[in-house]
Amino acid sequence: MYEILFLCFFIWVLTLNISWIVVVNLQWLKVSTSSVKYWNHTIQWLLFDPLLIISLFDLTLKAKSKVEKVTILLTAIILLTFFQYCFIFLGVVRIQHWNVAFSLIQWILIVFICYGFWKRYRKLLFKEELI
Image 1 (cartoon, helix red, strand yellow):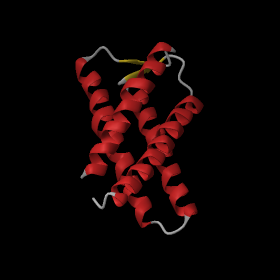
Image 2 (spheres, rainbow, N blue to C red; image 1 turned 60 degrees about the horizontal axis):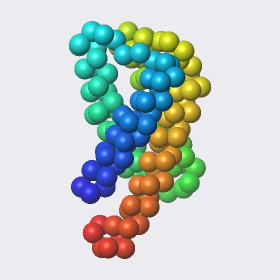
Image 3 (cartoon, rainbow, N blue to C red; image 1 turned 120 degrees about the vertical axis):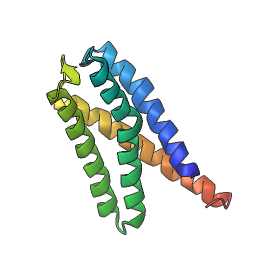
Image 4 (cartoon, one colour; image 1 turned 180 degrees about the vertical axis):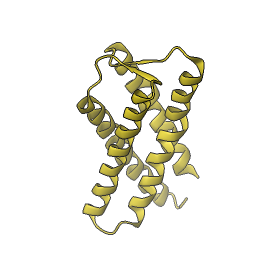
């Protein structure tokens, strides 16, 4: 339970604060002015993206080799980029200066930073004998 809350908050900090500020200030994406599409986008960033990342992190616990873990993390990055493109295609987010490379870089940084801090947090929980 602690891990899930930690990951949710950490992912929200990265995606909603840091990433969103960069994306909006560089004007790569613009959220639709339609309230339904805006809330669809908000729900995606608040619920869907963190749940996808957390569920794939959970899969890495079952992976036995580092290659499997990296494959799972790369799958997360590809899925997150794909869903971001789907939102652009559906008109929830308007394309301004969007590039798939920028999106990949953004998700690579978010996923690997979150994974590193999550592994560090798990070690702390093991040390404190909470898990």
